Image (cartoon, rainbow, N blue to C red; front, top):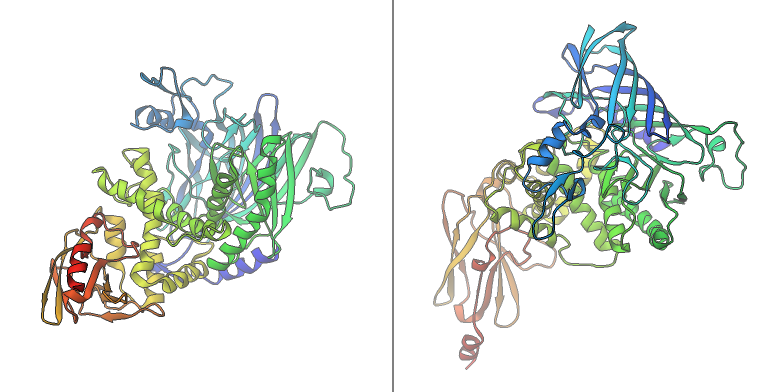
Length: 631
């Protein structure tokens, strides 16, 4: 656990960073939990001792817990939303009609009492005093016996019970691929309190935010079940199941169950999965991280899962180099859930895939270990920071690891953004993750537009500055909860550019980018390119000119409000022109060459600027014109 201790030392010295012009602080939790699972009826009982440290400047008179499993009930808010959204998640619905006349029905609606999920708190005390609490859907509202003063600790002791729902979304039992238990969001989880107050969001559809802390968890379960989990197994020689030291024997235990003991330092979540048919492989990566792979004993998928293992080590090395060192001592790739979902020190992914798909989902979910479990943004209100940044870096990593070497590995993200921008239904990225009118709009905004935010930032400030920005972002904000402003301030410090306009227009509005070449005129040895800004979002421009002799030149038009000029790429023939102030809709670019000497002119030939109409970005001579000029 050496890596985590080093990182923790860095955290404790970093609380004076500014966020929203206040001294940075964050709450802390230490969980000690014991849970006993009955694999016959998928019910479990548990105890939880939680030490909560109030690092805020505020006095807390109440707290909130998330009870996620309560979402999987017919009368839940999640089900109501599922039945009312125009494009419900196909994993959570069934078609009782035909392809021509579909009748889409929520799977949650049909759950019986022994299929639903629930989490129930049976007792709760604060420092030994019983508390009053109210279960409101997926949130437990708790009135404190004594306020928690700034800088003070308090201890909550809880007894709870739960029932694992049929696997419908992320967590659950008996998945479509036959995994017995995907145990995410399974325990009463204290809600986050930060500079914006409490984040006691109901569980409706999206993802999560948690409080940093240390977890000590014991799981008692049928001894035939193999577990993949957050945390380090403390009793491997009692457990076995592929965790014991190579060449050693495991102590035999009496009874039908085993108790697995895990410790997870400095995480904001704890997840596990279990199945009696798991194959468990391990691989030690070059940085010493132990990679665990747990997947079903299914002949049709074994080869892909074996091939995945060295590639996962390559992905880890890529992220270490291009973001920052992975701080924990292990990472697990576990077959489970209903697609792909990141959790602390592991991911749950579906395993019956082609190799390309299996690697792709692993790359994406593994990248979340950095952008969600190290830079733990609030995914309810800044979902694009996690999903978009993850999509960006995982596409970059796949491009290298798979040897694709595409010039722009983000073309899919740009297409997704183009769909969103032209849909007429786009909502700003400041929209709460649960408040998007359609699931497709959420997906395009969080994943595609979020990835383009970074790829396009490379166009704005230069690829080298973008690379340095990501690394400094890691250095300054790991194990914290950064906001969009925190990230853009890093980019400003690294590059020297003013970038508030970029963050505001791209994420807080639905303004679009559209620049056009209106006309090209020539007088003597000077060519004038008449440019127009049609969209409301400003950008600096790279105007790429190809001459008749085959040579190329870039004319760089800085954006005035950036108060800065992008460095030229090495080997580029570039001329810097006068700034373009946003308030002027047109600009005259003078090229010191006659029109006859020019073959083509293009705004941003890299296509990294997300111009919504590239049809007006180019000017070029036809073959007839070229022939006439040669004669």
